[in-house]
Image (tube, rainbow, N blue to C red; front, side, top):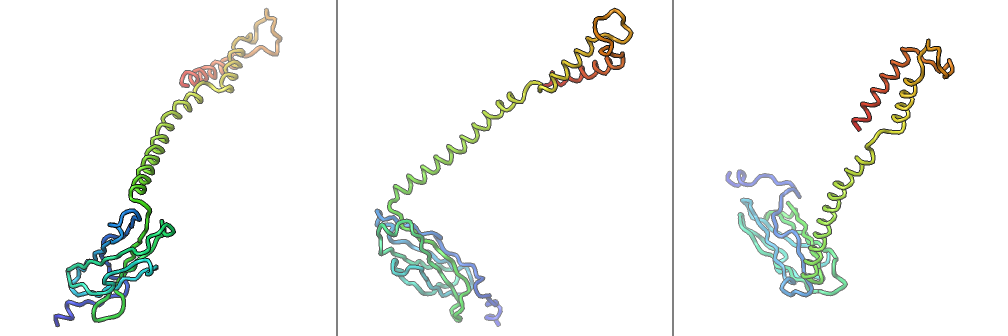
Amino acid sequence: MQQQKRQPELVEGNLPVFVFPTELIFYADDQSTHKQVLTLYNPYEFALKFKVLCTTPNKYAVVDASGAVKPQCCVDIVIRHRDVRASHYGVIDKFRLQVSEQSQRKALGRKEIIATLLPSAKEQQQKEEEEKRIKEHLTESVFFEQTLCQPENRTASSGPSLLTVFLGVVCIAALMLPTLGEVESLVPLYLHLSVNQKLVAAYVLGLITMVILRT
């Protein structure tokens, strides 16, 4: 009865696998990094079997590539890089850590860990710092470019348009023309405007003046 209560039905491949770290970085110029340690945690109330698989097993030596971990315990898995050469720089390899229940063969869960060989830790650090500086510089450049462009755009768009100025000149000319009924005028009769026409011209001129003052 206790075993049935403790052991739920587990679905294949759905069991979360807790392993640290999830990325291994080896540096060619630092032999101390040629040996890395993966720690597998078992937070469950039942024991787990584990197996370590690799996409390029000839490049690595895995100590205790398979074994068991007790409930609520952890186990260290040592991985050594044994083929350090320039042709492998930057190549991404993958490890797969599969876990299963001790009484069964099916894999209850799996976790992939990537492994990369880099030429130098110092070069990598310098590269990361340089990328960080470039990113910060680009961010600042975009910021300052925006602050400088906004006043220029406002300056370019300030001032009345040519159409507004033209309409204002037409209204002023209309107000200067003689009114209908004036006899003593050298302006031809067809250019004489009525009082209503001049009122419209004055109204439009007032609107244009407001627009010019706002710009």
